[in-house]
Image (tube, rainbow, N blue to C red; front, side):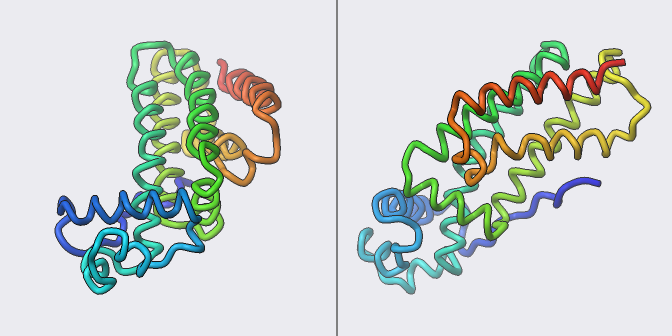
Length: 206
């Protein structure tokens, strides 16, 4: 069973409008300095010299602005993983690299600033669309690598593909969820990602 199919984020106005990017950039700075909970749409409007009503022409709520920011940030992780998945390395090496890169990039993103970590935690706790889309992308990336591994003869073919991919996607959670990441030290997470990746690869072997 696949995760939720990626869905478009709610938005208003033209998607490439300069003001949209200005609002997102201003919101990013406010969330970084003051936190998501303490920033209002009125604060953002004041910082860029427009009215709150004008911001609502592009975003229906503060959450939709937060969604856009989260989508941009986790999109950077998705692109890094996609490059690995599409490389010409063996499926085994690609899967190992995907686990490690997911951990490294998630730590860098979610903990570079505590206020941004709070935004990511809110997005995860409330199951924002950006979070669900990130999860769906991880599933798709794993599905590609496992499929390639089966075609190359590296991985077994008996277990239903969707079961395999869902199981692997599930065990990536401790290395990508902001609230779970903070429960261990980076050193402990490194040990665990190595152990779990090795276990996954043994289960996939023919």
